[in-house]
Length: 333
Image 1: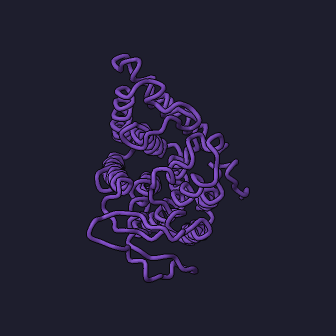
Image 2: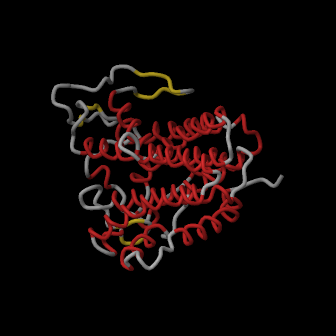
Image 3: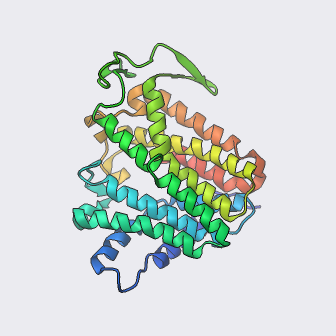
């Protein structure tokens, strides 16, 4: 078997993903032209396609073929694109750039961007329901996707993230730099007196760490987990296989956001394709701010190692998932 690399995986999977995204977003004449342009502007913008690739690689790990998993893979990317459109709005994270280009609300206008996000969200479910076979798999995929994108996961994580940015919902938090972040009125200090082991190293344990991990497991991790879950469902995965994919997804999803926090500190806008340093400017709670850059780097590495260990039951079929896990740790944008 040829050794897989990120390049060989991308060369094999990306053309199929891109073609399917173009096909599924080619809406009929009843869709207003400007709305369709805004939808495709965001959906088809150059990107890593991490989530759809995870779906396809999960299918292969469970013994399935790529082609039947493409509708589910594209549906996850549609929801990801919708979430980025809404994330960038002035009322949310207020970003002017996305993937090196003007954000959707800057390229079009705020109202069109909101509608484009709404339309991509619903198109995701239409795509899964119409094109996933057999029908029981389509129904299971729709249910899992709705839960992951809903109020207790993706949307809930975003809501908590915004509350945290306003200083609500958490106590005064002692940061890695020894400063204090203000928060929930009645509590003087987060539970920062104790430490606990996470696998092979010690991390600072506090209410703030628990809150931050919870936000990221929902805001970022939910869509990564469900990508893997959908790939497994399409392949007819067993319950133990789905659970192994879930453990992998939990760890990769959190590692992805820890690295994202680090890149916001260490990278540059021309590399990232969006503004950097904005988390610190807005006083946002992040892993580097809470436990420091070095500890955050070690934490991400441990999460990736734990993710790779969860793939053991799949044997060589999961080689692609392991490659993507290493990429999450090594990425620079």
